[in-house]
Image (cartoon, rainbow, N blue to C red; front, side):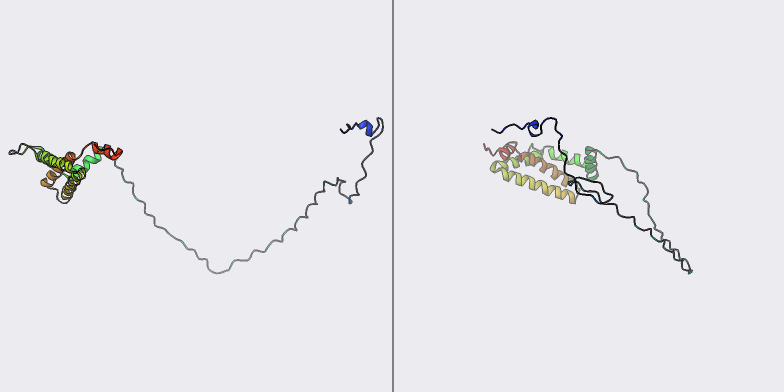
Length: 192
């Protein structure tokens, strides 16, 4: 085990501690710094002032001015109409496309029973689409949606009472072909 160093053992008490050896001589005008520090370099001399440049005299010729004019069109402010709600836009689209009285007449003609059968055209078509669905669910949907698509196409071409009647009847046919259990089959894959 090493012995502990005691300063009095190195320098006996009462003796002066020796001084450090002298540093090398520094050049004239620089401080005497320890070797691990260096003196900052002297600042560079300032640059000589630049001589003023003579300003050339302008040509004594004619002076030419060019002016560019841009025509800007300012659009007048247009009054913004108040935004319509969803139901107001829908009713405006329907009433602008088909007369409400024509639509009510076509709907009434579709649901009023035919005298010799006792059933309306809409219920007869819905029953037929239900029977087509009983054969195969896809068959009922294909026939019902196909007939409705043809009726709507006819309505867009000719806005007649007959086209409105066909659209109303085929719309009830889609209801006859639809079954809520189809949504369960589509979502879960479970059949009856």
